[in-house]
Image (cartoon, rainbow, N blue to C red; front, side):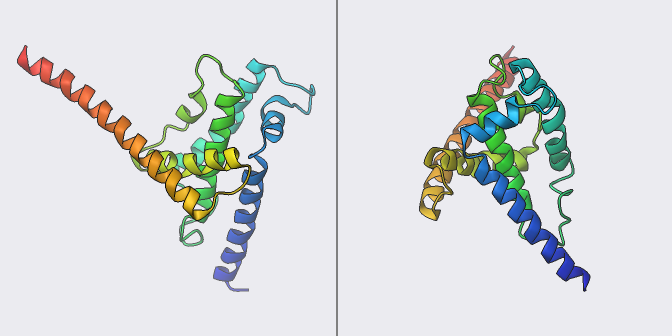
Length: 180
């Protein structure tokens, strides 16, 4: 079998597996099991769930982001970034449940912060993956194209507002220093 055919088969299998996991994570029961169930003890405490999320889950996902999205499939196989986008959505689902299930009451954004996304990854995460994941959880199903388009437009506007506010704050501080 030619290598490109094997690559397409691998891509298809990975996409199917990630999509299945992402669909399962639309349900709170699945997320609770992921964070709070342990094979060894049966149940994890909040502290154990936090440690598991940050020391087991997060490093594996962070390695994917550190590698520019490579790692699950190389660029020649994942030409349209299908796997990358599914991993972004998976991360957004985990981050949502990390916050919502109060795995970490003091720092609810610790999970996504652990990814240390670069600007391009952060933009993709905030304007595509997060609205898709959170909208799908809200509806209990995959969003329609119209629902996703609306959710993405709202998320993009919010992201640009946040980034604009951050730049203004930084600009004011710099401006004040120059006047002194």
